[in-house]
Length: 148
Picture 1 (cartoon, helix red, strand yellow):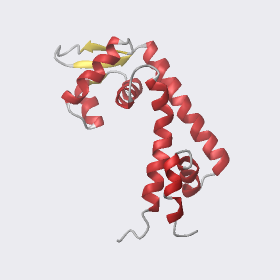
Picture 2 (spheres, helix red, strand yellow):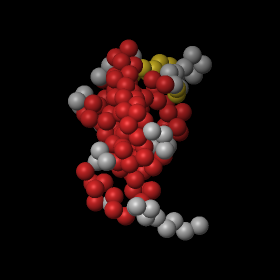
Picture 3 (spheres, helix red, strand yellow):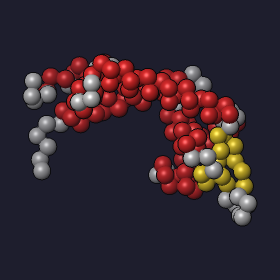
């Protein structure tokens, strides 16, 4: 099937950026980036996840994770615990500070989505356009929508 209108792809890109940037701005205030947020979110949602499971879940290599996980640990946001059965296996847990930061990040994104649904309703295109319009670059592609 040929995609005759790439507008939906662009729309999703800008909407996604609006959603992600909401948390990015907050995490940057803590000297961290999106990868730190992603790790912290999954560790908070899946306490006790092993390092191997986290890497598999996020589809990244151990090398790509080392610096970010080290920073989260140094900032007191996560902690490692050895497995009771195999000391080589490390389990990851959020600290209270980590859970608090995840709550702040989640609330910012939840507020954005609630405001979006309150304003745009539940139609996919309307929701995506509402989010996309928050990004300045969207104005350059908005005109290619085929049904308007």
